[in-house]
Length: 216
Image (cartoon, rainbow, N blue to C red; front, side, top):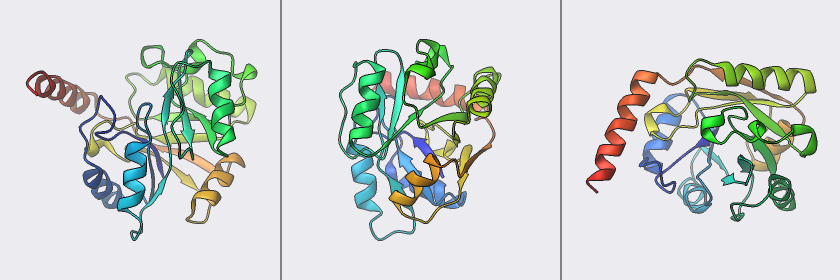
């Protein structure tokens, strides 16, 4: 499972949904979530396109709270940005979804736990292998928190370019349906795997993206 992928519905990605699906299948990833920034439009479209497909798409959104980013994993409806983290998490839970913290200690990518104390928040799980890292310090810190506090641990690509889908991923003990996936994560029946996205390839993508965006 790759629970954190961005599509062209995010302002910082150009990835087409069908390209994301193709790479996921080629890497034997059979569960994904389109977790675009502050919108569920990409997630809804991905679910529509895969209704008769073997690929399971979990509803999701990456929400910009005041303190940092939070995945509303299982959210079918948009949650407003720029709310306090605690309120954002309550709204996620109101949709019977999970509050998963992506890149929790990455200060330059709005890691929530750089500004908030996890003990003050009703967190359901955290990413301990986010593929977009430089030296691995933030992932290691998240891994230690997961181990010490018994928080479910996920791996995710955080791919903003479709070729990076599945660089990090999770193995999960579940049935292939949304409810089972959410329950298995909550119970900790999930494990993080994968490697970091090549910084050379990432730099090349970011350069090309900025150049293309400039001339759009």
